[in-house]
Length: 89
Image (cartoon, rainbow, N blue to C red; front, top):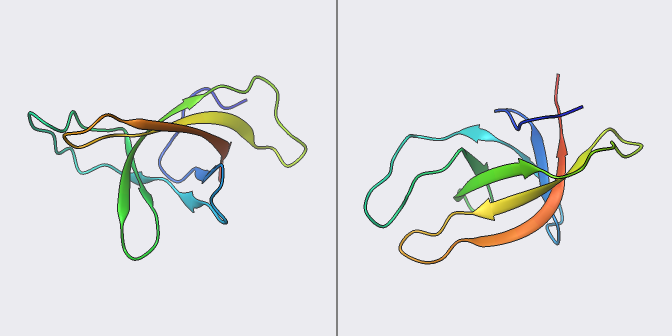
């Protein structure tokens, strides 16, 4: 069972055609950006600031779990979506 997301886990947000592996955050935060757990590549060399919470209790057949993904807002409210997370070896 996956209890917490880790760097290198594969995450596929709902409505994305493909997912990506979680990257380490750079530790930046300021008055308008509270910081985040991870960075998620999103195409065109863009890194999304994300927080991940595992919501699924039972793995699917492919070993993935449901998760809640927070796209952390920078001077704006965060947005949320569901997705799947898979532990990579």
